[in-house]
Length: 92
Image 1 (spheres, helix red, strand yellow):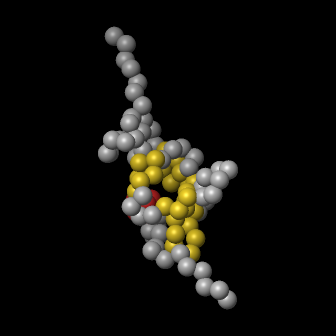
Image 2: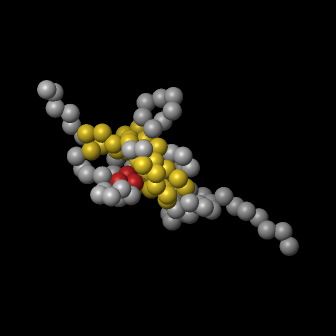
Image 3: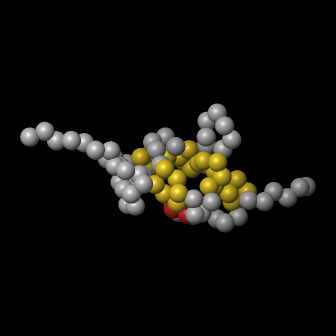
């Protein structure tokens, strides 16, 4: 009896990939088991978690990087990169 492999639908809550996905935050590697994550969930991956004083961005090749709010839902894919920057820069 043939079996079919279906790609999980990332729009469904709790959807899991077939294997762990590798992402980077500030050049440090992390493995995740979710196809979608909120900004808050991404911030919680680091130790210590990314503080509220820093902004989180998704690296988007070829265009402006995307600022990720805590409530934003991000579709996660293998090799995805994120970085943080100070939320407020004081001139000086």
